[in-house]
Length: 265
Image 1 (cartoon, rainbow, N blue to C red):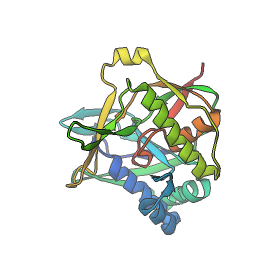
Image 2 (image 1 turned 90 degrees about the vertical axis):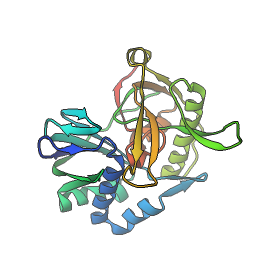
Image 3 (image 1 turned 120 degrees about the horizontal axis):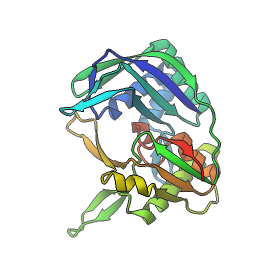
Image 4 (image 1 turned 180 degrees about the vertical axis):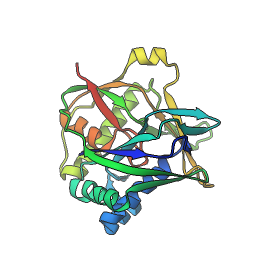
């Protein structure tokens, strides 16, 4: 289930481009008003499958009009939309909605600055039919990674780039199969998904990777690299729907991998 939250802030409000971590924290805070126990469980533990942890929700913040300068986002227009999605209707969606009514605001604490958004309205986004082939537009970068060993024998996390086609299909498929089992309590037998980036978009924009720093004001800050470009995804509709509802790729609860169906072939 997907929600659209209409937000407004003071005109010319300033916030860090690395707002993912504080916005995720604000979402957990809203969940706490509906269910402190579930909010704590999701934040501290989450759902485990094949040695990996999933939170089964994703979000993206879209601004009406901004200007980026000196490493900061300046909101030229005061309005923004927060899109949030999860298949956990009773545990996540309902508790989140309760939190929006109880709190009626979201405070983002980023880079030693507080930006307040007032919640004007929450609405349900109509269901989207998922077919075997769908074209998606990413509202936030998709993060996929693997482990590589360097010449010194040290293991390093490598974030996939658009040219890593085989690895993208393999890792994305495994990620969604894990999420499917967590949601439905059973395994899905499905062929590997086939993802194709929009070649015209890649030619037009030579750089489609984006680096986001998680928890930038902390000494343990982490840089994450995601891909932001339109893509077509072909395969089992049930598996693709999991990505639509939970987010595609990794770190969905930090606001990565939220996509919208924009066209079908």
